[in-house]
Length: 178
Image 1 (spheres, rainbow, N blue to C red):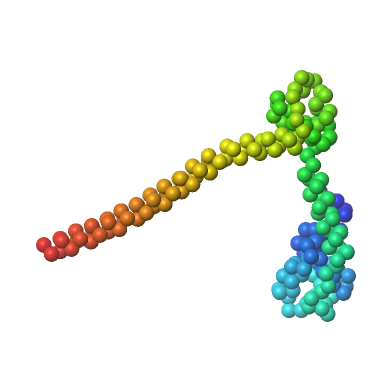
Image 2: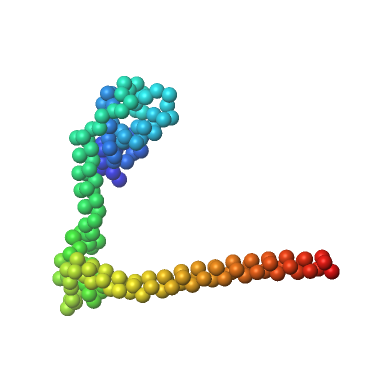
């Protein structure tokens, strides 16, 4: 559910947080692209909300609203990227090497993780990324070889089709001349 602030920062046309907000003389704001799309479908340049006619074909950008929306989106993305423990609602800071899962500081001290080994989550992520890249390299090489083989097979198949058509044509010609 969107917060009241997020609702206030949403374009009335696309219902998303404003992108390049412009301000009409009636004080309503819209995403620049949303307003342009709206106006292409209408014979007059009117406000999509109050239907008041706009005197400007290029309404000014609302810099204050644009800055506010950008700050809101950045904060929202940052909040979303901070994973929280489902048991304790604490930030996941550690990685349990024994269970191969991220844990919070409260989980680390719990009975479930007694005598387990932990690493900072960023360090564990780097290590897992390195291992994945090492595993991926031979697969990339195999894919390259498979693509090369496929090209050769496709060329061979096309050559066989041409030869088959050629053979059918010459067989037909031979039978007709008989």
